[in-house]
Image 1 (cartoon, rainbow, N blue to C red):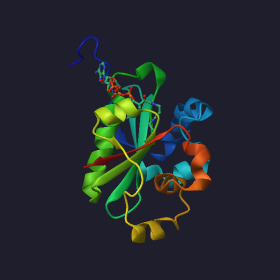
Image 2: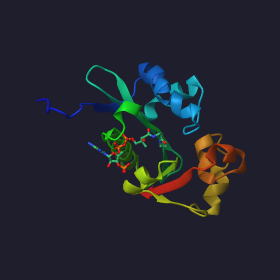
Image 3: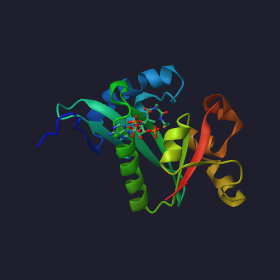
Length: 172
Ligand SMILES: CC(C)(COP(=O)(O)OP(=O)(O)OC[C@H]1O[C@@H](n2cnc3c(N)ncnc32)[C@H](O)[C@@H]1OP(=O)(O)O)[C@@H](O)C(=O)NCCC(=O)NCCS
């Protein structure tokens, strides 16, 4: 049954064929430096991390990814909703699904680097400072080539990407 005024969409795992639409969706956000631009190959490599939202006609209206960083720790990344769908609950639904994925994997903490402090605060995330991981784990994580890990560790080399963003964490 279709309820008048309610806009329908579903959230599902991404497929490789979604990569072009995911890139189109985040293109304006990358141009505004809200999200980090990545090579096409990186999206294909990360396709299992992605959930997407689509309308009944197959239009992709949102996406988000969960990246595992440590035994207990993951990152919500590339969460984006199409401009004409903002404020309809799509972001919340994708985030909820990513958090369920995280719990299923055994994660207990989720990191996010974002300008959307209000949205994430309302979804249970809090701003973090220094010292959220112990030095021993830090010394191993710092070996990762991943930009998101470097952003989590607040490394100097990624400071230009993180300028003005908030580092937020949620206890699952
Ligand atoms: C962050 C982002 C994904 C949120 O997407 P969204 O689909 O607009 O999020 P929601 O609709 O779930 O929530 C937005 C607001 O709409 C409200 N809302 C939710 N469901 C609603 C509904 N059915 N009807 C009306 N309003 C609703 C929520 O209360 C929420 O208010 P808040 O932001 O004040 O908490 C989106 O703003 C975005 O793409 N931002 C740019 C990319 C970015 O910064 N990503 C985060 C870092 S990875």
